[in-house]
Length: 518
Image (cartoon, rainbow, N blue to C red; front, side, top):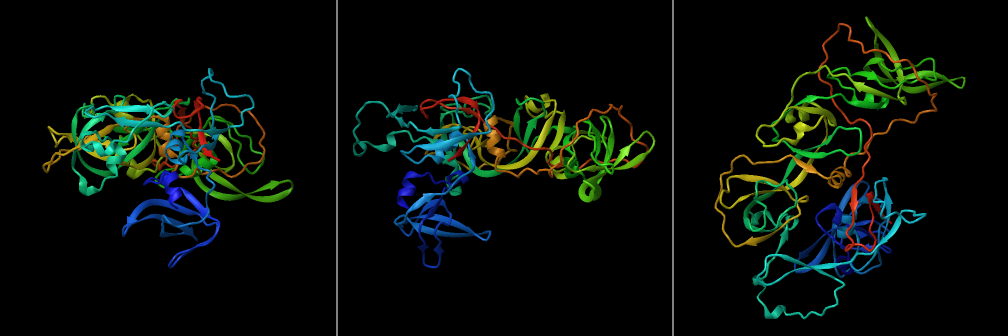
């Protein structure tokens, strides 16, 4: 076990929970780990003066926790892993020290740099060989020195001859977050500040002193710009956002998606944007421009190859000029529908999250006047995808501790030096938050562990057809429609931006991809 802890990164996040199995039973005091059983390594802790690894196994959907001493012997093998990772994750978590790693590219898009084309007959597999560097600090200097591992130099260990306190001890935001809650608040000096414009005031510039008051989890709404091409912008919106939203029409690719989006609050009103010719006389053929009120999912009988067959159908009401007609659409129907919005109300973000199920399409109708530049107001449309929980630090300047800001822990690449200064108790004004724009890779990181996509039932071969387009109809007089209940529609495809620095790998490509470990 000690060999594993020396070679493999074990940490607090799910990336730091490697899984191994042993080729023989491991008998503990009141527990036996079976041969070949998957063991998850969660953390390394000291118990009664002995270093142990906190582990877990899952049996019949029940998790069982136990500890293994570093002295535990056995032949341990890494479990197969079919998760998708970014190269940054592989570098930091999934390459054992002084080892190589075989990976296979997946979800590749044709956007790589053609000055570095892929090899001929490239099958997606690569051996990644990390090239390490040393980060160091010089005595009485505040900057961090990067030393490449292939420098032909000799060094002498003079630790015992120097006072370590004379040297800088830079900490990342992750390092600070891992401190115990009792250690907060703390005063720190910014050594390396984050790049980009998204930082509160000028608090995070190198040389500035800040107060880090506490660590905590906070909720955000993940939103993406609605546009037809792949160059969407992505945002994390805090609950404190004061702008107002109006609903935007949703698009549905199948009748199955209509069933998912159906709500008890209102009847879903849609217009067909794609024709569908039903292969069965019992089912309705759709023309472009047909309008429907979605009713409910049910089963129906059709004649298939001379026999009666029960299939899933969606009961709808077709809206005619002066009446309604009951029709059945096959659940496997692949077409296109656009929602018709009758709700003109303006919503706060909290109201949207309370009244509707995400994802949901909106547009900012009244911008947030409390922030100087509301980037969301410039978006033609936004899809509010889901609510996430993330890690944050509450910070302020030493000169005005009451003026506090939230900063993200895992998306802010900066380092600080803790200072031996006391902090007085502070009465906070409302915490300031920002709408955070995140990169494609960060968006992928947020989304990839979330809910699985729902898939429609299989469909038989269809007959392509083009039916006549119809003008938009107004609803016949009937009950007033309320706001619909939004749910997940369509399918999400994830990809990440990939750019490798040569100092990390012996091979450099630039294209959109994700990696799966082999």
